[in-house]
Image (cartoon, rainbow, N blue to C red; front, side, top):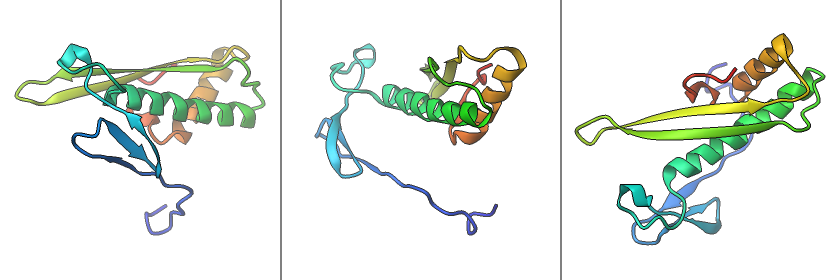
Amino acid sequence: MSPSERQDLYSAQAHSRHGTGRVDVSGRAGIPVGAPSELGGSGQGYDPEQLYAAAVATCLHQALVIAATQSGVDPSGSEVTARVRLGDGGAQHYTFDTTAEITLPSADGDQRERVIAQALRICPVGDQLNPPPS
């Protein structure tokens, strides 16, 4: 499907402004943000890696529930844990690796693998995981 044929289902925006210590999301009250203490920040608020990990975990879990339901698998007890690692690529270039662990207690073996593969196709950030969950 070309971009001109695609139908937008939803959009959101976030706005970050220097000196405010927050990011405003889709017109709602701001989320407190700041650099982690490990990188010399105050450790107050959420840092970008935490926000991205939350976005990945939420997106992938919603996709997992959809894929499980479509496959006749009970999504009860399912969980997704996303981890984001910021690395030093040298010369002020940073690397970003994201992994996820998926728990789907009602499926095992091939069925579990099929549901996870479908969830990764549904979730728009699923292709950012390295390596993909299994």
